[in-house]
Amino acid sequence: MTVPQLALNDGHSIPQLGFGVFKVDPDEAERVVSEALEVGYRHIDTAAVYGNEIGVGRAIEKSGIPRDELFITTKLWNSDQGTQSAFDAIDLSLEKLGLDHVDLYLIHWPRPDLDRYVESWLALEQMRADGRTRSIGVSNFHRPHLERIIAESGTVPAVDQVELHPAFAQRELRGFSEPLGIRTEAWGPLGQGKYELFDEPAVAEAAAAHGVTPAQVVIRWHLQQGIVVFPKTTSKERMATNFAVFDFELAPEEVAAIDALDRGMRVGADPETATF
Ligand code: NAD
Image (cartoon, rainbow, N blue to C red; front, side, top):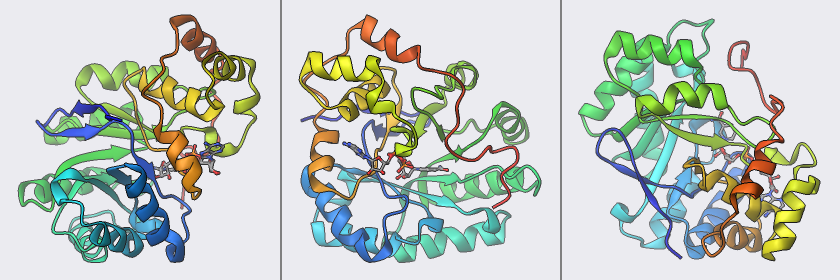
């Protein structure tokens, strides 16, 4: 099973399908990530605020997988935005992960009310220059936030990781960011289980037609649009089925039927107003 590698705007590349560990209990993270690596995932998406970087790091070390075959993302938490605080935050994340660099470091939320995301972005540029991260990007950034960091730094983020699933397809934002060379990463790609996505006829009928699960259909919908996706589960069986998505293809009309589920419905926080 070969996961496509997508080119980033800085010369690096990213495995299009990965594994996310939001809400994976710190005590379970080592087991869960070890199983994900056994299944074949090589791209892990964590964050300082998830509290599970130590478990992720242990799983990486125990796996014995060469570092250059792995793609590890972590994120700068909101309370660490700034310059020195951001440098300290990545150093702590690297220590917990047991790594000397990550592949991708993201500003987790813009928190426009704090007005420190530009300063933080300049710090991320320095982290990339000194090798603590290969690529830099953002998460939950809307067009005005992207425009501002690009104008003030000249650096276009490699990715914008945003809430994205069939009911919240982010077409307008993607129409702005992707032509600039910013890759879209989907968080909550399965809608976080917060609405009846798998019962939608467009999803259920495609699943029946291809003899796959509804989750596989939704992951395929992401992949066929060039989106980077990393569904989360703590079940090894689901890890395996979520990864087995390269031996079928949705027809254009099946994709269109799922596209029609877009209704601008968030399941998570609004980046403009989030205050955590
Ligand atoms: P998700 O859409 O991946 O949904 C996870 C839920 O789906 C879990 O409850 C799981 O039990 C269920 N699920 C997974 N596979 C399934 C299957 N095959 N069949 C039925 N149910 C299944 O939501 P998520 O975890 O929030 O998002 C994925 C990743 O995105 C996270 O783990 C994290 O790495 C990242 N994320 C980032 C942000 C951000 O602000 N940048 C926010 C949330 C998540």
